[in-house]
Length: 158
Image 1: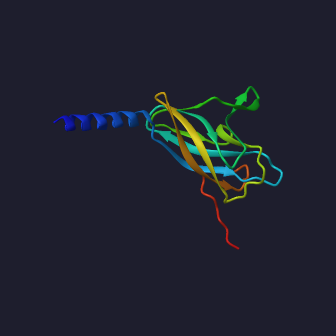
Image 2: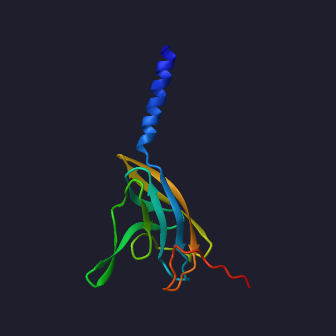
Image 3: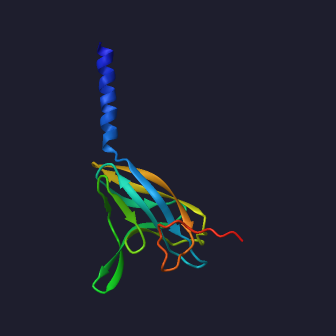
């Protein structure tokens, strides 16, 4: 009988610990491919959490400096600034996109070629605990101003 009570308490403790961590899904992760000499790029994605959470930061072993930014109109001027966190409300999809919240890839040592995959580590906070989520981000060619970044890419074979 004591063994059953002990097993139940261990299982209950493990279940309580996992309840603190938000389950965050990441979809449509992509980064803008760069030209030679270009030192910055942006990474974009959709984030959805099953609990209230916050994206605190991003990092990568492949990129020297990674920051979470927001583009926002200030009067008639579009301004970009680093943000401390991005709120991820429970059950809502938060889109990181050009001209909104996004991840800046900075101090690039070499161009990011279309098709190249960059691994980003996102730091998420939920319920007072932090966790990391690794994301594979594929570089896409820069698009014309009329293209929507979340539309499927057109592939032409010559």
